[in-house]
Length: 290
Image (spheres, helix red, strand yellow):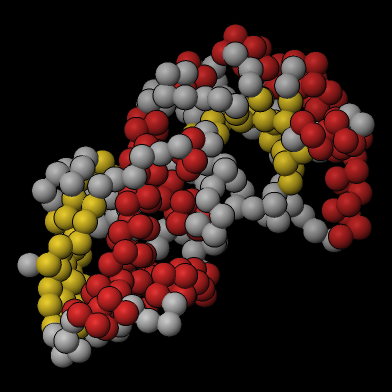
């Protein structure tokens, strides 16, 4: 059901296939010996994916791909699609087919869906706190190695917006880049020379820590977004007024559910929250025979 995937460039069929293959190789190795030893080869069974928590369901489309990769003969019926609000007792999907295959796929399906659903749930919650403002919620690169594809996908399902996927698709000149380059002007000018020599066009964002640094970016120009890092709401308002719509703005740094509404009220365009992917509680799901 790849046609049901949200429009994100990283959700390519080959990338999803590679992720699933790598995850199965890690878990299954040379065989699911528990199932091979204890379950008859000819056994055909059913199982249902039970929700034991409240939140936003995510990873259903990925689960379909995992079941298909493990055994194309498995029959899956989706009862609740990605993005569904779920509660304890709901059944997200059922699967029927060779019992060994169901058991082999079980843990990978659950590991992915539980974490993705946790991310989607927290994303939806924080997005709700932005109601009445124009701010959009962004994720970050603070993701689990080799699981970024799923985590950023979950942010989309929860109603958030993906920031850059990696170091290759956008340039963000953060505080260390600026300090190493010798200043904001030097960092921006060096970036333009680099892109010209490379023959590439990439969006450029610059992190600022003070109003003086914001003013320096405005004087140099040549960027696509200004990040306002670790600024309290009063300073954010000043920075937004100073920028005056000349560049999109992004608030970042230690923003929580307790502060995000106040940050959004300052008029920033984007708010990035690393906790969307690095500090979430997985949704409780289980796959049970019936």
